[in-house]
Image (cartoon, rainbow, N blue to C red; front, side, top):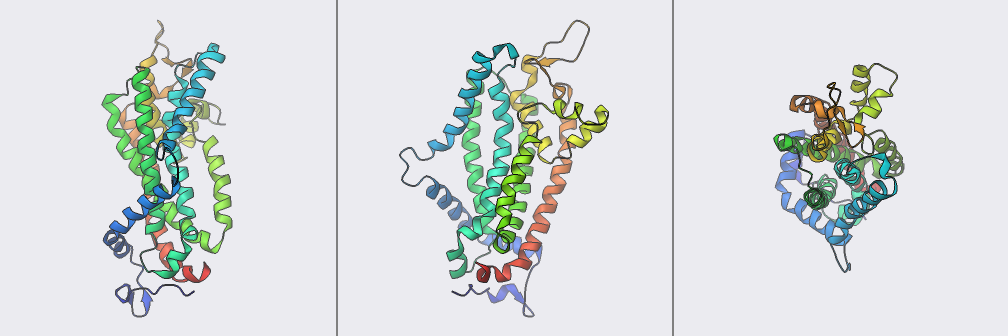
Length: 312
């Protein structure tokens, strides 16, 4: 089957137009298709399921239940206060990135018949896959907020707005990278398998199950340099924002008489003493990478798009 033809308005002098802004404009014109594909992605995922979207809520509920029992009953001497909330606050933004990126990477190969039959801006497929995962993320955040209310853990209200740029950076970074990898995966199917390993490594080098201080204090450098090296991971500033705002170590602040660093649940959380400017400054690195991922992802995708139908 031959690939669908590219409309003439996207061809200039016999060469497919790869202008970045032009492609963004075209995607915007197909926004209804993007929404429809994202909706279809969710419907297919839970097709013939008795409880449908509720399955997406069982994952965070299971984490809450397991870690509440493990760290609240079995090893209570560890004195880690509400570790399930801490874990979930960091795990949800990481899952938004990793699961969305995985779905985006395989979106074109999974929709090969659609790509070969009808023309539309192919970038819509990886973006819609990421959008579907974002909806799941929002539902799971509701579970986290409900758990916080039950355990009477108040977020850092004065910093709650930081979740907006942190989430936006996550979406841009993941979607831009997903657009690039989705095209590469058509030509080199090893990309999706390599991505699984890369995300596994990224998970353990991101302070999700441990605080940032554990990472920076054990790097072969002084504290300041170690902290800078730890924050080079683009997901670290994002996860740190979610920990600071949602787990909010200030809930467990215990300052000793000598004025030593406050503790949170038995762990020393240096984010307790960090303000909004520190977190906003740290988001500059992933934000810059996100802009670069979107720009170069779309440009490289445009160069590879011409033979996608044949390669599928």
